[in-house]
Length: 136
Image (cartoon, rainbow, N blue to C red; front, top):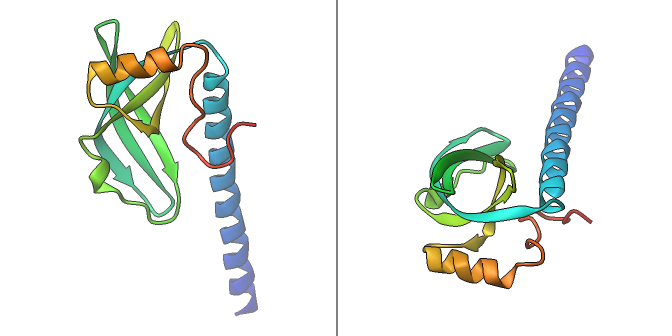
Protein backbone atom coordinates (compact mmCIF):
# COMPACT_ATOMS: atom_id res chain seq x y z
CA UNK A 1 0.00 0.00 0.00
CA UNK A 2 2.89 2.35 0.78
CA UNK A 3 4.32 1.93 -2.75
CA UNK A 4 0.93 2.80 -4.22
CA UNK A 5 0.76 5.93 -2.08
CA UNK A 6 4.27 6.97 -3.15
CA UNK A 7 3.35 6.38 -6.80
CA UNK A 8 0.22 8.53 -6.52
CA UNK A 9 2.19 11.28 -4.79
CA UNK A 10 4.84 11.23 -7.51
CA UNK A 11 2.15 11.25 -10.20
CA UNK A 12 0.47 14.28 -8.61
CA UNK A 13 3.80 16.12 -8.40
CA UNK A 14 4.47 15.37 -12.07
CA UNK A 15 1.01 16.61 -13.07
CA UNK A 16 1.48 19.76 -11.01
CA UNK A 17 4.89 20.40 -12.64
CA UNK A 18 3.43 19.99 -16.14
CA UNK A 19 0.63 22.45 -15.35
CA UNK A 20 3.03 25.03 -13.90
CA UNK A 21 5.34 24.71 -16.91
CA UNK A 22 2.41 25.23 -19.29
CA UNK A 23 1.22 28.27 -17.35
CA UNK A 24 4.69 29.83 -17.30
CA UNK A 25 5.24 29.23 -21.03
CA UNK A 26 1.90 30.86 -21.92
CA UNK A 27 2.51 33.77 -19.54
CA UNK A 28 5.94 34.41 -21.11
CA UNK A 29 4.41 34.38 -24.61
CA UNK A 30 1.75 36.88 -23.58
CA UNK A 31 4.23 39.14 -21.76
CA UNK A 32 6.47 39.22 -24.84
CA UNK A 33 3.43 40.07 -26.98
CA UNK A 34 2.43 42.99 -24.74
CA UNK A 35 6.02 44.30 -24.79
CA UNK A 36 6.09 44.41 -28.62
CA UNK A 37 4.31 46.74 -31.08
CA UNK A 38 0.66 45.66 -31.06
CA UNK A 39 -2.67 46.28 -32.74
CA UNK A 40 -6.18 45.82 -31.42
CA UNK A 41 -9.28 44.02 -32.69
CA UNK A 42 -12.65 42.86 -31.40
CA UNK A 43 -12.63 39.14 -30.61
CA UNK A 44 -15.76 37.01 -30.52
CA UNK A 45 -15.78 33.86 -28.35
CA UNK A 46 -17.17 31.04 -30.47
CA UNK A 47 -16.49 27.85 -28.52
CA UNK A 48 -14.76 26.38 -25.51
CA UNK A 49 -13.30 23.06 -24.42
CA UNK A 50 -12.78 22.37 -20.74
CA UNK A 51 -10.84 19.83 -18.72
CA UNK A 52 -10.11 19.44 -15.03
CA UNK A 53 -7.36 22.07 -15.00
CA UNK A 54 -7.98 24.49 -17.89
CA UNK A 55 -10.39 25.87 -20.45
CA UNK A 56 -9.54 26.65 -24.08
CA UNK A 57 -11.73 29.41 -25.52
CA UNK A 58 -11.76 29.64 -29.31
CA UNK A 59 -12.21 33.19 -30.58
CA UNK A 60 -12.26 34.91 -33.97
CA UNK A 61 -11.26 38.43 -34.98
CA UNK A 62 -10.53 40.52 -38.08
CA UNK A 63 -7.37 42.40 -38.97
CA UNK A 64 -7.43 44.36 -42.24
CA UNK A 65 -10.60 42.48 -43.32
CA UNK A 66 -8.89 39.10 -42.89
CA UNK A 67 -10.41 36.63 -40.44
CA UNK A 68 -8.17 35.05 -37.80
CA UNK A 69 -8.80 32.58 -34.99
CA UNK A 70 -7.09 32.20 -31.65
CA UNK A 71 -7.26 30.10 -28.52
CA UNK A 72 -7.24 31.53 -25.02
CA UNK A 73 -6.03 29.18 -22.29
CA UNK A 74 -7.46 29.77 -18.83
CA UNK A 75 -5.98 27.69 -16.03
CA UNK A 76 -7.82 26.72 -12.88
CA UNK A 77 -9.52 23.72 -11.37
CA UNK A 78 -12.86 22.73 -12.92
CA UNK A 79 -13.41 25.96 -14.85
CA UNK A 80 -16.42 25.95 -17.15
CA UNK A 81 -17.92 29.26 -18.18
CA UNK A 82 -20.68 28.94 -20.76
CA UNK A 83 -21.56 32.61 -20.15
CA UNK A 84 -18.45 33.55 -22.15
CA UNK A 85 -19.87 32.11 -25.39
CA UNK A 86 -20.95 34.82 -27.80
CA UNK A 87 -19.28 37.64 -25.89
CA UNK A 88 -16.79 40.07 -27.44
CA UNK A 89 -13.54 41.22 -25.91
CA UNK A 90 -10.34 43.03 -26.81
CA UNK A 91 -7.80 41.10 -28.88
CA UNK A 92 -4.20 42.30 -28.65
CA UNK A 93 -2.11 41.04 -31.59
CA UNK A 94 1.48 41.51 -32.74
CA UNK A 95 1.80 43.97 -35.61
CA UNK A 96 2.96 42.08 -38.68
CA UNK A 97 2.00 38.77 -37.06
CA UNK A 98 -1.77 38.84 -36.39
CA UNK A 99 -1.91 35.15 -35.48
CA UNK A 100 0.15 35.94 -32.36
CA UNK A 101 -2.70 37.25 -30.23
CA UNK A 102 -4.24 37.36 -26.78
CA UNK A 103 -7.89 37.69 -25.83
CA UNK A 104 -7.96 40.24 -23.01
CA UNK A 105 -11.15 39.53 -21.08
CA UNK A 106 -10.65 42.57 -18.84
CA UNK A 107 -11.96 44.71 -21.72
CA UNK A 108 -15.40 43.93 -23.11
CA UNK A 109 -15.93 45.47 -26.56
CA UNK A 110 -19.16 45.17 -28.51
CA UNK A 111 -18.84 47.59 -31.42
CA UNK A 112 -16.20 49.06 -33.69
CA UNK A 113 -16.81 52.38 -31.88
CA UNK A 114 -15.80 50.71 -28.60
CA UNK A 115 -12.63 49.50 -30.32
CA UNK A 116 -11.86 52.96 -31.71
CA UNK A 117 -12.36 54.57 -28.30
CA UNK A 118 -10.12 51.95 -26.69
CA UNK A 119 -7.44 52.43 -29.37
CA UNK A 120 -7.49 56.20 -28.86
CA UNK A 121 -7.06 55.75 -25.10
CA UNK A 122 -4.19 53.24 -25.41
CA UNK A 123 -2.10 54.61 -28.29
CA UNK A 124 1.18 54.52 -26.37
CA UNK A 125 1.03 51.04 -24.92
CA UNK A 126 -1.42 48.20 -24.41
CA UNK A 127 -3.23 47.59 -21.14
CA UNK A 128 -1.79 44.93 -18.85
CA UNK A 129 -2.62 41.30 -19.62
CA UNK A 130 -5.66 39.80 -17.90
CA UNK A 131 -3.96 37.41 -15.52
CA UNK A 132 -2.86 37.68 -11.89
CA UNK A 133 0.71 38.73 -11.12
CA UNK A 134 1.15 40.87 -14.21
CA UNK A 135 4.31 40.59 -16.31
CA UNK A 136 6.47 42.68 -14.01
